[in-house]
Amino acid sequence: MSATVAVILVLAVGTYAFRLVGPVLHGRVTLPARAQELLSAGAVVLLVALLATGALTEGGGFAGWARPAGVLAGGVLAWRRAPFVVVVLGAAAVTAALRAAGLE
Amino acid sequence: MRSTQRTRSGPPDRPAQDPALLRDVALVSVAGGIVGVSFGAITVAGGLPVWVPVVMSLVVYAGSAQFSAVGVLLAGGGPVAAAATGLLLNTRTAAFSLAVAETIGRGRVARLLGAHLVTDETVAFALAQSDPARRRAAFWLSGIALFVVWNAGVLLGALAGSALGETATYGLDAAFPAVLVALVLPALREDAGLRRAALPGAALALAVTPAVPPGVPVLVALAGLFLYGTRGRKRSA
Image: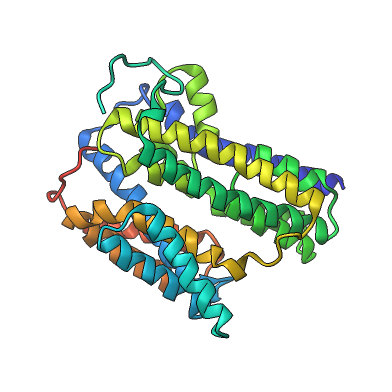
Protein backbone atom coordinates (compact mmCIF):
# COMPACT_ATOMS: atom_id res chain seq x y z
CA MET A 1 0.00 0.00 0.00
CA SER A 2 2.80 2.42 0.82
CA ALA A 3 4.13 1.83 -2.69
CA THR A 4 0.81 3.07 -4.08
CA VAL A 5 0.99 6.13 -1.84
CA ALA A 6 4.51 6.79 -3.13
CA VAL A 7 3.36 6.54 -6.75
CA ILE A 8 0.55 9.01 -6.13
CA LEU A 9 2.83 11.41 -4.27
CA VAL A 10 5.61 11.33 -6.86
CA LEU A 11 3.12 11.76 -9.70
CA ALA A 12 1.32 14.60 -7.92
CA VAL A 13 4.46 16.52 -6.99
CA GLY A 14 6.15 15.95 -10.35
CA THR A 15 3.09 16.90 -12.37
CA TYR A 16 2.47 20.01 -10.30
CA ALA A 17 6.11 21.01 -10.75
CA PHE A 18 5.74 20.73 -14.53
CA ARG A 19 2.58 22.80 -14.39
CA LEU A 20 4.19 25.48 -12.25
CA VAL A 21 7.00 26.15 -14.72
CA GLY A 22 5.01 28.67 -16.74
CA PRO A 23 3.22 30.50 -13.92
CA VAL A 24 6.42 30.75 -11.82
CA LEU A 25 8.57 32.07 -14.63
CA HIS A 26 5.91 34.46 -15.89
CA GLY A 27 6.78 38.05 -15.05
CA ARG A 28 10.17 37.05 -13.65
CA VAL A 29 11.85 36.06 -16.87
CA THR A 30 11.27 38.26 -19.87
CA LEU A 31 11.06 36.21 -23.00
CA PRO A 32 11.77 37.73 -26.37
CA ALA A 33 8.69 38.05 -28.60
CA ARG A 34 10.03 35.29 -30.82
CA ALA A 35 10.22 32.86 -27.89
CA GLN A 36 6.67 33.75 -26.85
CA GLU A 37 5.53 33.05 -30.37
CA LEU A 38 7.33 29.71 -30.40
CA LEU A 39 5.70 28.75 -27.10
CA SER A 40 2.24 29.36 -28.48
CA ALA A 41 3.09 27.50 -31.67
CA GLY A 42 4.62 24.70 -29.60
CA ALA A 43 1.39 24.29 -27.66
CA VAL A 44 -0.54 23.91 -30.92
CA VAL A 45 2.06 21.44 -32.23
CA LEU A 46 1.64 19.39 -29.04
CA LEU A 47 -2.16 19.48 -29.30
CA VAL A 48 -2.11 18.36 -32.94
CA ALA A 49 0.31 15.52 -32.11
CA LEU A 50 -1.92 14.54 -29.19
CA LEU A 51 -5.02 14.41 -31.32
CA ALA A 52 -3.23 12.47 -34.07
CA THR A 53 -1.77 9.86 -31.71
CA GLY A 54 -5.01 9.81 -29.72
CA ALA A 55 -7.05 9.20 -32.85
CA LEU A 56 -4.85 6.54 -34.41
CA THR A 57 -2.95 4.72 -31.69
CA GLU A 58 -3.68 2.79 -28.53
CA GLY A 59 -0.99 1.25 -26.36
CA GLY A 60 1.70 1.83 -29.00
CA GLY A 61 -0.27 0.12 -31.79
CA PHE A 62 -3.06 0.92 -34.22
CA ALA A 63 -6.31 1.85 -32.48
CA GLY A 64 -8.52 0.17 -35.09
CA TRP A 65 -10.62 1.86 -37.77
CA ALA A 66 -13.69 2.95 -35.81
CA ARG A 67 -11.96 5.63 -33.74
CA PRO A 68 -9.98 7.39 -36.51
CA ALA A 69 -13.04 7.24 -38.78
CA GLY A 70 -15.06 9.05 -36.11
CA VAL A 71 -12.34 11.65 -35.55
CA LEU A 72 -12.07 12.15 -39.32
CA ALA A 73 -15.83 12.73 -39.49
CA GLY A 74 -15.41 15.29 -36.69
CA GLY A 75 -12.57 16.90 -38.65
CA VAL A 76 -14.72 17.22 -41.77
CA LEU A 77 -17.52 18.76 -39.72
CA ALA A 78 -15.06 21.20 -38.10
CA TRP A 79 -13.62 22.09 -41.51
CA ARG A 80 -17.14 22.91 -42.68
CA ARG A 81 -17.44 25.15 -39.62
CA ALA A 82 -20.02 23.02 -37.86
CA PRO A 83 -20.64 24.00 -34.22
CA PHE A 84 -18.32 22.48 -31.61
CA VAL A 85 -21.06 20.30 -30.14
CA VAL A 86 -21.85 18.85 -33.58
CA VAL A 87 -18.16 18.11 -34.21
CA VAL A 88 -17.66 16.27 -30.92
CA LEU A 89 -20.95 14.37 -30.83
CA GLY A 90 -20.64 13.61 -34.55
CA ALA A 91 -17.23 12.01 -34.02
CA ALA A 92 -18.47 9.92 -31.09
CA ALA A 93 -21.64 8.91 -32.98
CA VAL A 94 -19.74 7.74 -36.07
CA THR A 95 -17.32 5.68 -33.96
CA ALA A 96 -20.14 4.22 -31.87
CA ALA A 97 -22.16 3.39 -35.01
CA LEU A 98 -19.19 1.68 -36.68
CA ARG A 99 -18.57 -0.39 -33.54
CA ALA A 100 -22.25 -1.28 -33.31
CA ALA A 101 -21.97 -2.46 -36.91
CA GLY A 102 -19.12 -4.73 -35.92
CA LEU A 103 -16.14 -2.69 -37.14
CA GLU A 104 -13.42 -2.24 -34.57
CA MET B 1 -15.77 40.53 -25.51
CA ARG B 2 -14.75 43.75 -23.85
CA SER B 3 -13.44 43.65 -20.37
CA THR B 4 -14.96 46.46 -18.41
CA GLN B 5 -12.53 45.96 -15.62
CA ARG B 6 -9.44 43.85 -15.69
CA THR B 7 -9.26 41.60 -12.72
CA ARG B 8 -5.71 41.50 -11.45
CA SER B 9 -5.77 37.76 -11.09
CA GLY B 10 -8.00 34.87 -10.43
CA PRO B 11 -11.17 33.77 -12.10
CA PRO B 12 -12.76 36.35 -14.36
CA ASP B 13 -16.12 37.66 -13.33
CA ARG B 14 -17.93 37.41 -16.62
CA PRO B 15 -17.44 34.09 -18.36
CA ALA B 16 -21.18 33.49 -18.20
CA GLN B 17 -21.62 36.11 -20.90
CA ASP B 18 -20.51 33.69 -23.55
CA PRO B 19 -23.23 31.06 -23.95
CA ALA B 20 -21.38 29.28 -26.75
CA LEU B 21 -18.30 28.86 -24.57
CA LEU B 22 -20.44 27.69 -21.64
CA ARG B 23 -22.13 25.11 -23.82
CA ASP B 24 -18.86 23.83 -25.27
CA VAL B 25 -17.24 23.60 -21.86
CA ALA B 26 -20.31 21.82 -20.48
CA LEU B 27 -20.11 19.22 -23.25
CA VAL B 28 -16.42 18.51 -22.69
CA SER B 29 -17.01 18.40 -18.93
CA VAL B 30 -19.75 15.81 -19.30
CA ALA B 31 -17.53 13.70 -21.56
CA GLY B 32 -14.67 14.09 -19.08
CA GLY B 33 -16.93 13.12 -16.22
CA ILE B 34 -17.90 9.91 -17.98
CA VAL B 35 -14.24 9.06 -18.55
CA GLY B 36 -13.71 9.84 -14.85
CA VAL B 37 -16.42 7.34 -13.92
CA SER B 38 -14.66 4.73 -16.00
CA PHE B 39 -11.29 5.55 -14.39
CA GLY B 40 -12.76 5.13 -10.91
CA ALA B 41 -14.51 1.92 -11.89
CA ILE B 42 -11.50 0.35 -13.63
CA THR B 43 -9.17 1.16 -10.75
CA VAL B 44 -11.45 -0.33 -8.10
CA ALA B 45 -12.36 -3.29 -10.28
CA GLY B 46 -8.63 -3.96 -10.63
CA GLY B 47 -8.37 -4.42 -6.89
CA LEU B 48 -7.19 -1.04 -5.60
CA PRO B 49 -9.09 0.61 -2.72
CA VAL B 50 -11.63 3.36 -3.39
CA TRP B 51 -9.42 6.15 -2.04
CA VAL B 52 -6.68 5.50 -4.62
CA PRO B 53 -8.50 6.75 -7.74
CA VAL B 54 -10.23 9.50 -5.73
CA VAL B 55 -7.09 10.96 -4.13
CA MET B 56 -5.04 10.43 -7.26
CA SER B 57 -7.55 12.37 -9.36
CA LEU B 58 -7.57 15.28 -6.93
CA VAL B 59 -3.81 15.65 -6.54
CA VAL B 60 -2.44 14.38 -9.86
CA TYR B 61 -5.38 15.48 -12.02
CA ALA B 62 -4.18 14.25 -15.39
CA GLY B 63 -6.40 11.67 -17.02
CA SER B 64 -3.99 9.93 -19.38
CA ALA B 65 -1.22 9.76 -16.78
CA GLN B 66 -3.63 8.34 -14.20
CA PHE B 67 -4.88 5.64 -16.55
CA SER B 68 -1.31 4.73 -17.47
CA ALA B 69 0.03 4.69 -13.92
CA VAL B 70 -2.87 2.57 -12.66
CA GLY B 71 -2.54 0.34 -15.70
CA VAL B 72 1.12 -0.31 -14.88
CA LEU B 73 0.32 -0.89 -11.20
CA LEU B 74 -2.49 -3.34 -11.95
CA ALA B 75 -0.32 -5.15 -14.48
CA GLY B 76 2.29 -5.66 -11.78
CA GLY B 77 4.80 -3.31 -13.39
CA GLY B 78 5.88 -1.90 -10.05
CA PRO B 79 5.67 1.58 -8.50
CA VAL B 80 8.78 3.00 -10.18
CA ALA B 81 7.56 2.14 -13.67
CA ALA B 82 4.07 3.43 -12.82
CA ALA B 83 5.36 6.79 -11.61
CA ALA B 84 7.84 7.13 -14.48
CA THR B 85 5.17 6.42 -17.09
CA GLY B 86 2.81 8.97 -15.62
CA LEU B 87 5.48 11.63 -15.26
CA LEU B 88 6.72 11.15 -18.80
CA LEU B 89 3.17 11.61 -20.07
CA ASN B 90 2.87 14.83 -18.11
CA THR B 91 6.09 16.51 -19.24
CA ARG B 92 4.05 18.24 -21.93
CA THR B 93 2.18 20.18 -19.23
CA ALA B 94 5.40 22.17 -18.64
CA ALA B 95 5.29 23.43 -22.22
CA PHE B 96 1.55 24.06 -21.91
CA SER B 97 2.00 25.99 -18.67
CA LEU B 98 4.49 28.29 -20.40
CA ALA B 99 2.05 28.88 -23.25
CA VAL B 100 -0.81 29.88 -20.93
CA ALA B 101 1.24 31.61 -18.19
CA GLU B 102 0.04 35.02 -19.31
CA THR B 103 -3.55 33.78 -19.39
CA ILE B 104 -3.38 32.36 -15.87
CA GLY B 105 -2.38 35.73 -14.48
CA ARG B 106 0.12 37.04 -11.96
CA GLY B 107 -1.49 36.86 -8.54
CA ARG B 108 0.03 34.27 -6.25
CA VAL B 109 -3.25 32.43 -5.75
CA ALA B 110 -4.02 32.50 -9.46
CA ARG B 111 -0.59 31.06 -10.25
CA LEU B 112 -0.82 28.29 -7.67
CA LEU B 113 -4.40 27.27 -8.49
CA GLY B 114 -4.20 27.90 -12.21
CA ALA B 115 -1.13 25.70 -12.58
CA HIS B 116 -3.08 22.70 -11.29
CA LEU B 117 -5.76 23.30 -13.94
CA VAL B 118 -3.35 23.17 -16.90
CA THR B 119 -4.57 20.28 -19.05
CA ASP B 120 -4.78 19.53 -22.76
CA GLU B 121 -8.38 20.70 -22.82
CA THR B 122 -8.01 23.94 -20.83
CA VAL B 123 -5.02 24.96 -22.95
CA ALA B 124 -6.90 24.16 -26.16
CA PHE B 125 -9.93 26.13 -24.97
CA ALA B 126 -7.79 29.09 -23.96
CA LEU B 127 -5.69 29.23 -27.12
CA ALA B 128 -8.80 28.99 -29.30
CA GLN B 129 -9.99 32.39 -28.04
CA SER B 130 -9.27 35.59 -29.87
CA ASP B 131 -8.26 38.02 -27.13
CA PRO B 132 -6.67 37.93 -23.66
CA ALA B 133 -9.88 38.51 -21.70
CA ARG B 134 -11.69 35.70 -23.46
CA ARG B 135 -8.65 33.47 -23.13
CA ARG B 136 -8.62 34.01 -19.40
CA ALA B 137 -12.36 33.39 -19.10
CA ALA B 138 -12.10 30.21 -21.17
CA PHE B 139 -9.15 28.91 -19.15
CA TRP B 140 -10.76 29.40 -15.74
CA LEU B 141 -14.23 28.34 -16.78
CA SER B 142 -13.06 25.13 -18.44
CA GLY B 143 -10.46 24.54 -15.73
CA ILE B 144 -12.88 24.72 -12.83
CA ALA B 145 -15.68 22.87 -14.62
CA LEU B 146 -13.43 20.04 -15.78
CA PHE B 147 -11.79 19.67 -12.37
CA VAL B 148 -15.11 19.45 -10.53
CA VAL B 149 -16.81 17.12 -12.99
CA TRP B 150 -13.78 14.86 -13.49
CA ASN B 151 -13.34 14.33 -9.76
CA ALA B 152 -17.06 13.84 -9.18
CA GLY B 153 -17.04 11.27 -11.97
CA VAL B 154 -14.08 9.40 -10.51
CA LEU B 155 -15.73 9.28 -7.07
CA LEU B 156 -18.95 8.01 -8.59
CA GLY B 157 -17.14 5.37 -10.63
CA ALA B 158 -15.07 4.22 -7.66
CA LEU B 159 -18.19 3.82 -5.52
CA ALA B 160 -20.64 2.53 -8.11
CA GLY B 161 -18.33 0.33 -10.12
CA SER B 162 -18.72 -0.24 -13.81
CA ALA B 163 -22.37 0.76 -14.06
CA LEU B 164 -21.70 2.62 -17.32
CA GLY B 165 -20.16 -0.32 -19.09
CA GLU B 166 -17.48 0.12 -21.72
CA THR B 167 -17.11 3.79 -22.71
CA ALA B 168 -15.80 2.71 -26.13
CA THR B 169 -19.35 1.65 -26.94
CA TYR B 170 -20.37 5.32 -26.96
CA GLY B 171 -17.39 6.34 -29.09
CA LEU B 172 -16.04 8.47 -26.24
CA ASP B 173 -12.49 7.64 -27.25
CA ALA B 174 -13.15 9.48 -30.53
CA ALA B 175 -14.70 12.46 -28.75
CA PHE B 176 -11.47 13.71 -27.15
CA PRO B 177 -9.35 13.85 -30.30
CA ALA B 178 -12.36 15.53 -31.93
CA VAL B 179 -12.46 18.16 -29.17
CA LEU B 180 -8.85 19.03 -29.97
CA VAL B 181 -9.58 19.04 -33.72
CA ALA B 182 -12.41 21.51 -33.21
CA LEU B 183 -10.27 23.77 -31.02
CA VAL B 184 -7.05 23.85 -33.09
CA LEU B 185 -8.49 23.82 -36.60
CA PRO B 186 -9.21 27.57 -36.77
CA ALA B 187 -5.59 28.38 -35.85
CA LEU B 188 -4.26 25.85 -38.36
CA ARG B 189 -6.55 27.17 -41.04
CA GLU B 190 -5.37 30.74 -40.78
CA ASP B 191 -1.69 30.24 -40.06
CA ALA B 192 0.43 28.49 -42.69
CA GLY B 193 3.45 28.53 -40.37
CA LEU B 194 1.53 26.55 -37.77
CA ARG B 195 0.53 23.99 -40.38
CA ARG B 196 4.14 23.65 -41.51
CA ALA B 197 5.17 22.90 -37.93
CA ALA B 198 2.20 20.90 -36.62
CA LEU B 199 1.48 18.50 -39.46
CA PRO B 200 5.00 17.06 -39.90
CA GLY B 201 5.30 17.08 -36.11
CA ALA B 202 2.20 14.93 -35.78
CA ALA B 203 3.41 12.60 -38.54
CA LEU B 204 6.70 12.20 -36.71
CA ALA B 205 4.87 11.49 -33.43
CA LEU B 206 2.84 8.77 -35.15
CA ALA B 207 5.94 7.27 -36.75
CA VAL B 208 7.80 6.89 -33.45
CA THR B 209 4.80 5.77 -31.36
CA PRO B 210 5.44 2.00 -31.69
CA ALA B 211 9.08 2.41 -30.69
CA VAL B 212 9.11 4.78 -27.72
CA PRO B 213 7.41 4.97 -24.29
CA PRO B 214 4.02 6.72 -23.96
CA GLY B 215 4.39 10.48 -23.66
CA VAL B 216 7.52 10.69 -25.81
CA PRO B 217 5.80 10.87 -29.24
CA VAL B 218 4.18 14.25 -28.62
CA LEU B 219 7.47 15.64 -27.32
CA VAL B 220 9.20 14.45 -30.49
CA ALA B 221 6.54 16.35 -32.45
CA LEU B 222 8.03 19.60 -31.14
CA ALA B 223 10.81 19.09 -33.68
CA GLY B 224 8.21 20.39 -36.13
CA LEU B 225 8.86 23.85 -34.67
CA PHE B 226 12.04 23.99 -36.73
CA LEU B 227 9.75 24.31 -39.75
CA TYR B 228 7.65 27.02 -38.13
CA GLY B 229 9.52 29.79 -39.93
CA THR B 230 9.95 33.42 -39.06
CA ARG B 231 6.85 34.75 -40.71
CA GLY B 232 3.34 33.56 -41.22
CA ARG B 233 2.10 34.53 -37.83
CA LYS B 234 -1.27 36.13 -37.74
CA ARG B 235 -2.25 35.45 -34.19
CA SER B 236 -0.45 37.30 -31.50
CA ALA B 237 1.16 35.16 -28.85
